[in-house]
Each structure stands twice: as structure tokens, then as C-alpha cells.
Image (cartoon, rainbow, N blue to C red):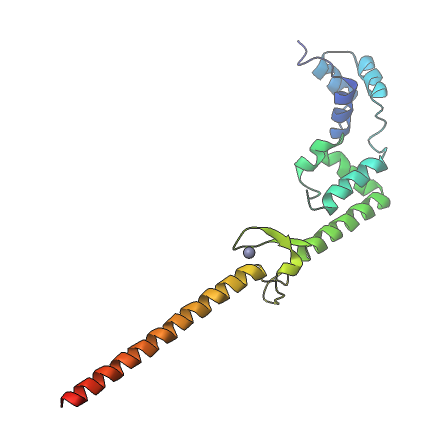
Length: 187
Ligand SMILES: [Zn+2]
């Protein structure tokens, strides 16, 4: 009994690229068809050898890594491409060009992570331009975790509280003074 029916050329292409080490006989058994038919499907799907590098795919994968959407080793990255992770690793090992493209993308992603254009304020949770955050060497990205507006609000609040406290102390001193005068007058 065949495990399942022969896939469409698109599905077949993805499978061939995802599992480059599987033999034609494996697919023949998996799909319940002859090896010759698998060879035909492979031909129709446009998949050559596992070492045929598709530079367009490499560039698209590098782009996703560069934007920080995925890392090279995350399986989800390859969901969008007709190639699996293991096969892609083969491409990297086989080609200096592929390796360099990926290394460059990884470096850019790392730089962007440490030096982002935007950042989420840990206080108000809005995503704001990095310029809205005051520079500080105490944090890994070199900026305070709260945006300037949130920092100013807290500073204002603190100032108000301090003013209230000063008013309170003044009032208390005045009361003490009045009380003292009263007491001494009573004497
Ligand atoms: Zn904020």
C-alpha cells in the first residue's frame, strides 16, 4: 500500500530540496510509484542535484536573516522556501559565495540588534524612534529603557511630590512655630 499519492511538481520540488540525501527509491516507495516515475517528477520539478545552488533563494534567505526575522538555524525560516535547513547547510559548505552572503547578513542583523532604529519603551510600551531615548552606557543598546516623555513624566511627578513634601514641612514648621508661640505666650 502506498503511503500517499505522488505530489504535485511544486510539492515534489520542496521535498527533493528538503531531503537531498534521500534516494529516488525512497520516494518511489513513499509515493507508491516506480523509481523511473520519481526520476521524471524530479526532472519536471526542475530540481537538479542537491549541489545546484539557487542564488536567488540564497539572497532571499540572507535577507530574512539580515532583517532579524529568523536565524540561520531556525526551521521556520525554511518554511517559506523550497529548500530545507540541512540542504541549505550543504550549500553553505559547498560555496564561499553563499557562506559570505550569510555571514554578512548575520553581521548586519547583529549590528541592528545592538543599534536599532526603533525601540519599545518599557514604560508606555510604544515603539518609538531611537532618538526618543536618552543615551546611556549602562544599557546594552546604549539607551535608557524608558522614552524621554515617560522619563519627563516621572521627573515631573517626583518634583511635584518633593514640592508637596517641602510645602508639608513648611506647614508643619509653621504650625510648630505657632504652637510654640502660643505655649510660650501662655506661660
Ligand atoms: Zn514611554
